[in-house]
Image 1 (cartoon, rainbow, N blue to C red):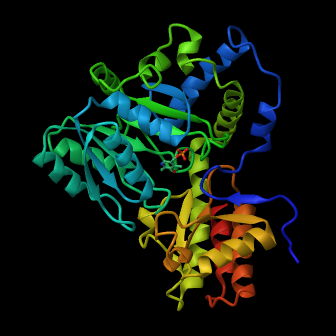
Image 2: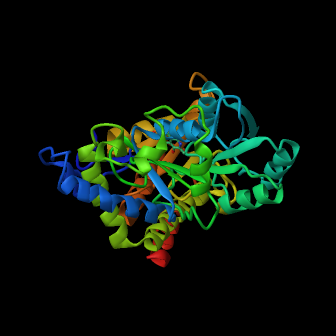
Image 3: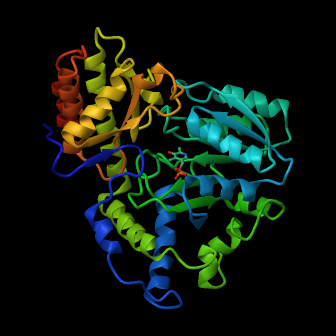
Length: 398
Ligand SMILES: *Cc1c(COP(=O)(O)O)cnc(C)c1O
């Protein structure tokens, strides 16, 4: 028998849960794309996108997913043969490096493994060794490992090296979840996508860029009409803003999602994600006490992202738990991406719990209770008292 009927919870790190308000905003006829209300609405979206990122500078909107935003950022930053330093803390950092390499950038990867953040001292060292590096690329949180990087510290390292490299950050997993201050932290290029903390269906992505990055992009020989950020950020006519037909219904969704973020307030949004993350961590700490096969991927809480948590249960338990929660309880958990080769038994020891976007205390406590039920049903040994510990975090944080 199953207890899965009822509203399903997709607790994977993107696409995230879409609020009913966002879904309803899309349920309408197509608008006139040539004049009128749509243009006015987009004029209002642009400043709100800058507000979410903490910038007074520029933003370009793309019809595309996160991979498109990666490619857009690369095309505007580099000419073929330019040098880039990519700091990798998991699967997605590697992905951005690969995209740059395939586009003709001379990429130097510094890999920090799957459990540790970027060490700013090594960034400084690499930049001193090679003053020709034009940009440093990294993720704020790598969604696979859930390692959180200290972006302000990377800027300090770039400056300490006397380098004029641009700082480019992938905040696809974190924008609208973890604290982010583009201008205050000295970020030149920031990429994000619609389907994570921004609570909109997959299909829109965003590249914010500093005035400095904009000046330099004039010489980037990889810019093609589709990726060039200048007409998108400074359109002379409306359709330039989207390189063609506007993604009308995604824009209605985005307008609603931005309204929801504004109503809650960014500080409150960050606090909610921080508290829900600590709720999840408290449960894992308790399950793992005396059961070393259960634990979080990142040991130090300061180095963990607040929108998604990577964990291990020992193979094959993680896959068994995921199957059980989906089939028996109506919760889909994330796979353990990039932690082991899917063809190996080790792969089945990892999973991820998302707490990203439109998620509240009862959803997160529900996921944890369902994981506990799965462990009981599957006879997986675990520490007792995890749900009480998780409830305690909610009680103190609410
Ligand atoms: C989801 C994600 C991506 C990829 O985004 P897509 O929309 O799947 O192309 C890249 N980087 C990070 C950090 C992500 O979380």
